[in-house]
Length: 99
Image (cartoon, rainbow, N blue to C red; front, side):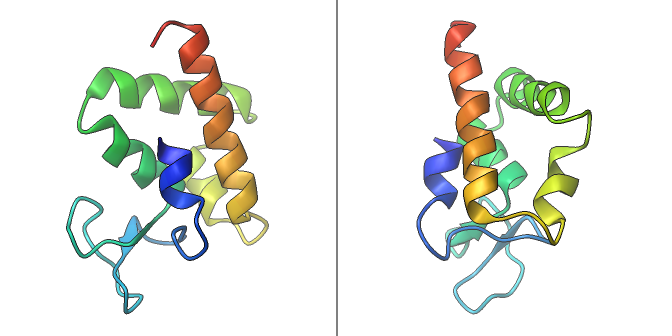
């Protein structure tokens, strides 16, 4: 679900959790938010469920060289496709764990 949230063109951002349609930083839970960083997309889709959010973040940490996912999202090398792929990998892992 998090990958699907940021996959459409213009729905991914970096250097802030979310942005509104004018490109200003926005609360990721707000109705004004229209694009999200990868980590905020996980948070919004987890809907505040700490276990789901924690599992996703732990998997991303372990899988991607123990680098904080938020920092990976914000690197100049990061692309929308890369972040979507990482999130899809985390979702596949979670499904395999029965989540």
